[in-house]
Length: 187
Image (cartoon, rainbow, N blue to C red):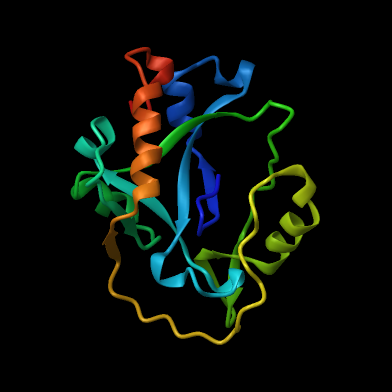
């Protein structure tokens, strides 16, 4: 899934998929969490962009509007606990992975930078695989033709910003969600 300025990565929420919809393993309809590019990195080369989970407040997921903010929490061993303490939930959507028009690459490994494994950057090998398979999807890839020199100035482990495209995605998912347990995004 792609907005006008960012590529989105997804992570299978397998346990919640089975809990909410036990038939998921039979028909291929699973729940996915979405990673999005850190807003400070949109202008960087694809391999230098950080991807963090897209979070929203519980009330924003239930009743999104045009003022809904997006929260990003730096990936770590404690980031999911941090998000839960702040009443944040990841943006989730049901996707059918057995459809003919679905391109799946993964599981990918995050990149290694200066000998250390990252938790938020896509490796060049994974971008190369996606680039070789662009005929299988319509979203444009992130750019590779920008300077590879960069300095990340972190503003903390929790970033809040507003993006109208995220508000629209939330409204669409909220309209598609019903009380049917197989349609809910959270247990």
